[in-house]
Length: 439
Image (cartoon, rainbow, N blue to C red; front, side):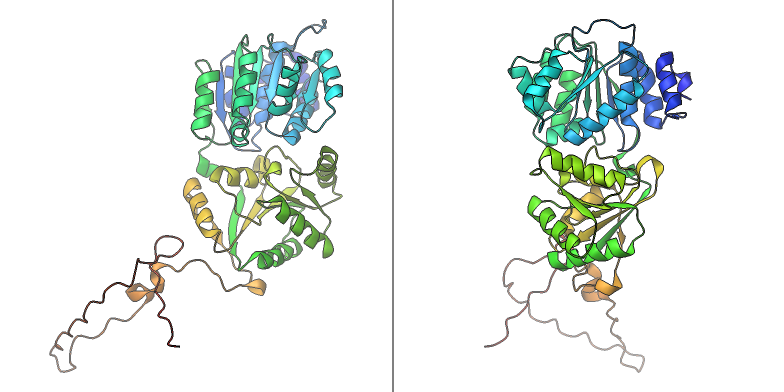
């Protein structure tokens, strides 16, 4: 029960109004030490309730009687506009019975309008690093009085190249009393460096191991011959799977646009979302998906973080993501808050090694699936069982039929190797070198 936490009565009233009763595991673990003022580093899967886990303690520390706002008291940094917008909505919901005001600053919006918002000095400022740094450099932003700094999806911010921007903003919040860092993955050396620099004697909370991510989601692979074959598989899945809403992920904007055009041409209600779309189009795509005007969103990884849509229960990886962390965040769009989900990755010969590396990263083996109507010729690299004795070659008899043994055959003369050995794409099975036919 949220009532067990030392939260202000106005926050408990908002939670009751929103029908929040039982805290999720990440909320139960993070809220008490955050209320006590500890710096936290929290790793928890997407859809686990991380936003409330930092917003409620933050609000609790800022709550009080109405007073003139003279400084920004809390800063929340996020990697994408969509996640920042979603976080603003959550802050406003939880603070509805308080005098706390929030503001949003992200790229893609009018710079002068944002400067006017900053002159009103919101208590909580939510934004993306690049645009916040622009306002800082322009003299519109003063972070000296920030009390609480939150880095949400910190690993993603570093992946997107925001390390220097984040460091500059952190340094501008030099007088803060608390820093909360949340992520869905452990990240790499860059994240460890940020943790060492910005957190002071932190509490480390790891709510799930990497292999436990998306445990309510079935994860499958379907092999394909080429991109055109993948397009037919996407169409078949969208026509035959039972789902309410779906996202199809590609690695490039060009492929996203091509696939979107293909789906619209065959009658699917779809939208496309990628970095070249302006803010108006991005908002429209997400709102249509949320409201049911479209059932399918084709997107690059710009949508892999911060997109929380009710009823999103199918994710298709048209292209295999380039890292295990990206796979986790894509698949995390479905199977949220304990709901059932399905993730299908389409695998060509050039995707197999990526897929295998993701399996090793997650310490899982994805379910192999065959769609009979569209079964292609590529079924994955040859395994060890496909050659030699392991392929089921029967052992030759060694007796002569009369109880005696046949003399051992003379060993064939060794041939000089024709060149370096060839191995299959999974690095395991040796491949036979073909001898050219005589001309």
